[in-house]
Image 1 (tube, rainbow, N blue to C red):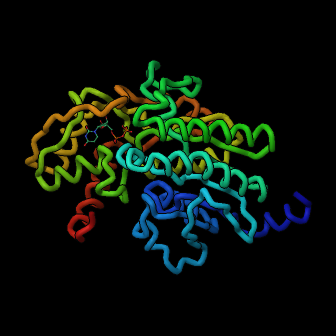
Image 2 (image 1 turned 135 degrees about the vertical axis):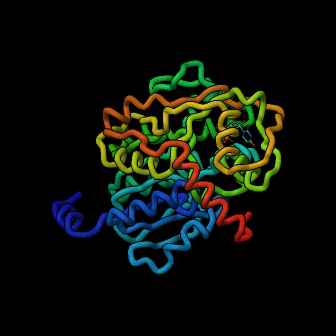
Image 3 (image 1 turned 90 degrees about the horizontal axis):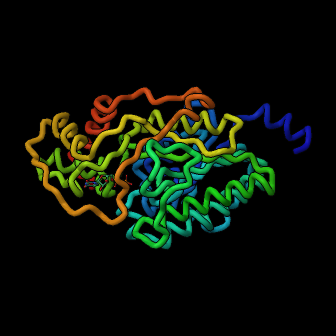
Length: 327
Ligand code: UDP
């Protein structure tokens, strides 16, 4: 970068590109970046994202949307400071339906997003996942655990595409000197999750609000740890601004069984639903809890929003959308 460019960069507003910017997490990140003074270009092909998530930004001076598949060449005729690569199906139901698109966005899409960052001299952050740990044999999961993944199982398309994306990100860092960051995101929930995306939060809330049976898979003793979206994007932002190229777990370490989670949602919605047990999907991880020591130390970050508070906001959003006839 020339001295002149550095000078220009200091004067103008930071420019961020968010792939998957119309998705659940991508759109929350867009909101946070706009609130922190960035110009934001969101890119999405609406495969799992939706225009509803960004409709409130129509006409915003610092926001621009491009409808594009990020596996195609990304052309932007302007400076870029940060590339946040969030495009990907992320629900097991979605990536089971879209295995090739999932593999393509994790591989070709990550390649294009990294290429953009390299060309523009921008920082790059990969939205990776706790799925890189597979069905973990180490608990809680630390970043130096290599994982237990079935490459050819039903989750393989997602897990391996994200593992490949991490490898490619590290290669761009080492070979091309791109300033890269890798966030390993654990289960996150909040307003704007698709009502029908198949993940446990929308499934249970939707069922509870309609007083329909709540479908607990397996015996419900498998565990997850749920992080509220506002906490998560704050961690993402801090990671991008940090100096750490090594992966960082981001999630809420509060671990709960799926059956307890169903009970909690039933209580908060005052639902008359009963729990019904359905077969556990193949390769469904038995336990998951992030070790966030690294995030605490490096980013001075920890989640603040507890489950009752986060779920109350999520349930309110779901109620609004259900009564508006959303699916
Ligand atoms: N699950 C469930 N009922 C549902 C949907 C999911 O019991 O209707 C379980 C699922 O088997 C898993 C956990 O909830 O053990 C979290 O599932 P999700 O699809 O949200 O994401 P995952 O953490 O498995 O990627």
